[in-house]
Length: 93
Image (cartoon, rainbow, N blue to C red; front, side):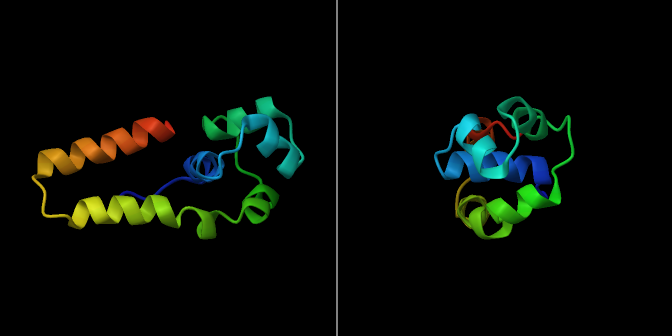
């Protein structure tokens, strides 16, 4: 399984919590446009953002799904397709 960047983790945490860009921006004291640039990889994720959103705690569900798909007794094509769908839904690729 590939390592997620901090930018990808921010998006996963935001979507996983059902937060809009505006709600996330309020929580981390940044503008919505800056949060979007962070998610798109155009800006570095500030340490404060990572601490406020507690990335490691909140991406476990994504990693659990990805690991379960990798370990499932499914054809490799189906596993890859399911992981692609998960990534596209979260727009992390």
